[in-house]
Image (cartoon, rainbow over all chains, first blue to last red; front, side, top):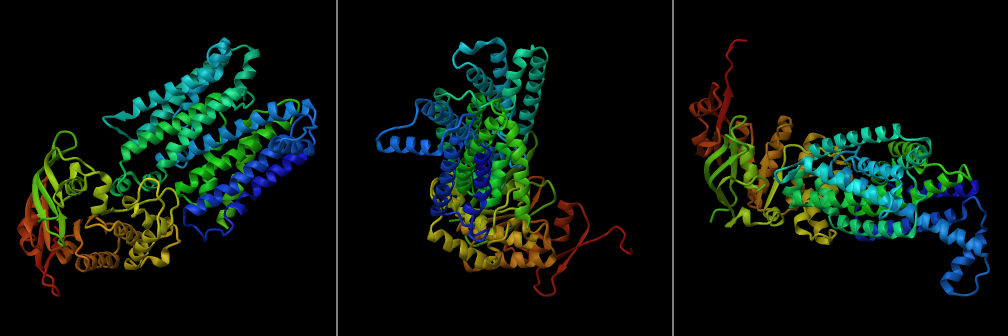
Length: 364
Length: 263
């Protein structure tokens, strides 16, 4: 198991070499380059997923996994046990896909928020979406409303949507949304929800407290196909909309007035991008809890490696975030087996040193 | 037909008029200077012309078309703006910045093609920024950064270039270099230039015509000789100046007078 974790981290560490072999010399963003980088990152996602499928409390031989996959592809006999099959395809695979989706969603939302607000400290949670979702989730946990609609995710998503409407309502003056006002509105709403969360936590009994804390630090164990399909649908739709405006986002990053001078309808583009990024954040948060750090760090990492052009940055951040959260979640569910750590602990624990490594590597 | 026609423009941010009843026309290939004290409405006028601020009153025609009816993208194919300063939060390279000038000519999905690379290359050649191509924008000096912004504006292939106090942060050499470059483009490519500046002497040196703004109105308008006089400057800027002739060019030259002449 430790062996698997080591190989996973080794793959992540090698990403800079694969993705940007020529260093900074070849910086032009062309379609062939975007495809090249994405193919490399896709291969890495596949590798990471395969290794992650082998890692876990019960041992599954790598040969069994390969056999199972090949038989799936070419038909033929499956001579692995039913137990192994269940572990691989009903327990581990959904969770890996889920982690990958959430990682991709948070990274893309992080790129968009940092770009739109022109603030390197922005992350998907900066507009308070996480706070609203958390209040919803905690109410679901405390009242046991799990049967209702989608249970915890359902209430969390309602909380997230409510926050989005609230924050934009506060920040909207006449027909415009000012980035600074939006940022402030987000911070204030988040602070307000934090207070509610603290209130709910301090009045909660022991039994629920563990569940609440787990949710607040990110929990991917809720993964079921229903959630996966829902998250996948929202993410892919949101990403398609966002990518359509990738070049506009480049211009907005250099200044809103400049973007207007260069022909962008800034107010409209901003609204579309904010809503799309907020929605994919809302969906990701409501099914996985608050996984910190991913949406802040992954965009910066990819910017350091590949430059600031969003046509390359958006897909590469999605794919890298995907690998990153799969690795982090594998660590979270294997390090203290049979128990689990909240994945947010892992993302921060290994994300911070890795980020420093990249920062130093760039400085040299 | 004039390329820019401003007709009785009025603009207000909230209550008092920042611009009131401003009308003028600009011919193709002209070099126009807009001068006036702080708060006289210079920058607002520029923003109204390029359609960023919608006028409350009056109309603006660009190439015979009303600006309000033009889409931003189409306006950006005609008008380029060189801003005062441009600070980058995320690191774009010079090449990337110049290529952004191609934005109005690309569709939503398209990547830049051969033509765009060639035009950007030419723009960098003209502004002597080719050697900076792969440098980050934030690693440049003020003068270099302004040249890159001109290159980006040129990559737009505009007919009109608007300059908003482009030399405010430059030393005297770079100020002259900047305006020399703009004047060359103005002459060789008959690019129409409208420049807002605080530097009356630079305006006098380079402009065909000057518009002197005062409290949102045009105080006077005409050749540098007609506009720049001791009385007009005193009226508008409320300060004492001496106006004589530049010994080399013969254009009017303004010298501010201190209240403590012997110190």
